[in-house]
Amino acid sequence: MHDDKQHTDPAGEAETRADAARCRALAARDAAEHATTEYARRAQERVANMHSELALIHDDHARALRRAADRGEP
Image 1 (cartoon, rainbow, N blue to C red):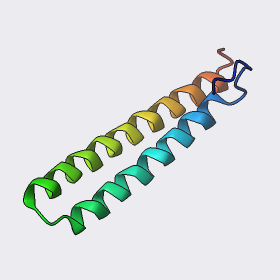
Image 2 (cartoon, one colour):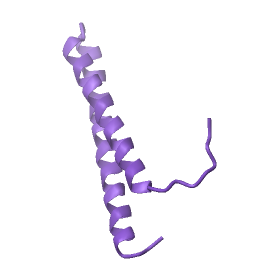
Image 3 (cartoon, helix red, strand yellow):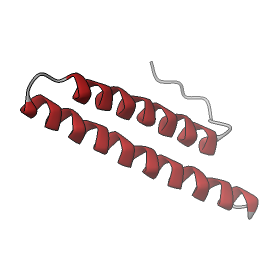
Image 4 (cartoon, helix red, strand yellow):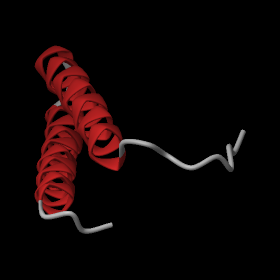
């Protein structure tokens, strides 16, 4: 469900998305460790790497938002 109210802490929301991506990366790494075939193991490792990269992007976005807020930018 989409909520139209304004978000009060976009940086915090970006950090929440980063945390969620890290959790998904950990789950994929665990799945890779328990995979029964090399194909499945590689696939889960790629998923884990993708979510790790997403976490870094969200962390970078949160830092940029916090720097902008510190400078008084909207």
